[in-house]
Length: 230
Length: 180
Image (cartoon, rainbow over all chains, first blue to last red; front, top):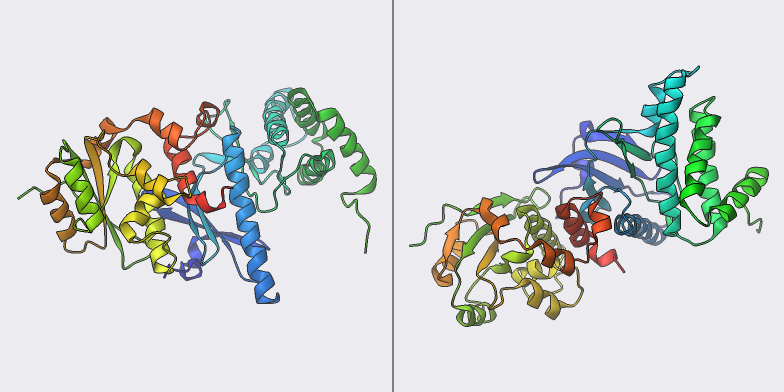
């Protein structure tokens, strides 16, 4: 039987969310991140198992799909299906876009703006690639986008595909951008001009962006929930 | 007796009672005989075509997966040895996997893998039967054929712009049953 990550020392846990615990560990000679989807005791066990299994499947499928499309994502090393854990590559020498932006304090100097805009442009073109491959991330925030050094090159990695889906609908892609816009502007006040650059690069690199941006405008008016049944 | 200095044994952290031992051999000539011995079970090891291995880590990822399947009672093939070969393959077809990753007459070099070989007897037995020279594992790359690996695992150049070949290979092995 595999060692349960819950038996790993708590010191190895680096993050706990509503759905998963994130540990830092090692898989042979590689540093790795272990993502455990823990059991929710308030759910019916059968439903619980199906949901967890489906989310893990969704996550690794998206990682593979992105990888094949030439989008930088962490490698997967091992799946512990008994304990609902994914062992994946730790992206070394990286920081989140959130951390990156927070290095700068508003009011931004012209130089700051230049750097921030250039990174925003990179993020926008990766999102264009993501959506042109019909992958919808489902939880885009500035914490789920990593920048890997060296400085100036900043390779953009996407992480945390637990809520992702494959969809060709402009609606879903519009909501994806909307979620990011909300997260971006609420985490980083007075960065509207920077987020604009994300969208500019997005539309430049994605032929179908017109339709998606139109949806984004609609979603802004009404919020992200479209279907009002029940 | 063949020297076993070059065998490396790795404890499996996730399954603490298991070990994976790996050795590299070059200069195989008795392919037909080997094949018979593998089929009859006289060789208690997985013999992998070295061309399709780019790193020891690739072997560890596949072997750990096989150890896990055994420990959960979910072996898809007849033995842990064939399971190592099957795990290594991106295909869900067992026969095809064994054919692709097993030793074939065009292979001069093989990677031998034994599981739970605590006293080293299994790999010693391989060394005696294989009629080839044991090589240090760090020479593995000399035998690697990256083009074949890219083809077998269907890895494009676009993907390799953002990923090492080893990471692409490891991911395909790890997520195989989810990749449909």
